[in-house]
Image (tube, rainbow over all chains, first blue to last red; front, side):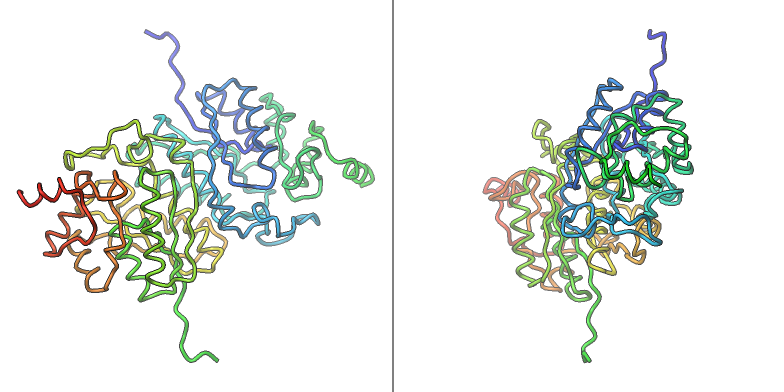
Length: 234
Length: 234
């Protein structure tokens, strides 16, 4: 009876950062999206959540859910969740950084797949990126290939697929794609450290600033004045 | 310098139920165990947690951690987490029951693997059981085989293995093994419904009572009087 075939539903994991903002823009074109944010006690959760909520309002999604998972902060081991560990501000170093949260994306995907199963969604989208990124082991294509086997074996529904549309893209390509799609970068937040103006010094800020610079674009979010002065000097 | 080689560390997922109690008994022989309990807002969490804590005290483990994950209850879809859904008491039916919590064991294993990575543990033990059980899809050997691939691909440490020592055992065999190992069944709790005396009617109680009966043993935990009368009549 409905002349317009309804698009399949998808759960989109949305931290509120740059990559997930572009992932949301892609999902809004192909799916009927349900946005999922995980509050895991990370330092900048309040700021991330307001970014998530602003992006959800921007796209007018019917379903936007923030779930709380204290396990990662209780377990510790990362500068993102343990305030006693110093946040690196000297630029990306070789190896896996102290901001690595052990097996974090498994927690995020578990929540997304559980919700997808309840909603009858066909897909879960996550903005994981391998090149130009922090070197986290759970951001590699192989990890997601195996996760899809896990879903097939371990759910009642069976047919849910995790999609990683950005995984092979360089950060500058992601910025350009986001601009083409009209992704609301001004509502997104990536900084690991602060909540009012981005620090410009943590790994996440450095990757974001370099991406906008390489794309020949200006990042619309506020940075601390000291960062701007330094980046103009550089 | 140490004459006694120290045993490897393992994280043991411990709901406080019969199967995980036997799993803990096995782990106490082979490993230096760290016990992990997940509070996911299930109906009988307060009772489960006191069983977990009693079993941890029984084994004198140095590390026992309860983590809180609200995602499953926020997502809903199961009679274990949604009080509006009626708990089945008519006995096991064909198919996946309403007590199935979508993709639940992925949440548990994610927490266990994160903790194992922080502790430097070699293994994660979970008391999943396939035969005689409720038919949950995340209790099958294939699921754990794939999960081990996921850990290899998605952790910094890499070498952690999930072990499922009970997965192929019948429930009566698990009871006999627990008796042989001196597992503290009197401290365990399996009922999905009540917190003072086990109901004897939910799927979990039925499986447990049948297991003790088939093993020719008496379950040491209290049941509601009506259940005892019925089971004597049967």
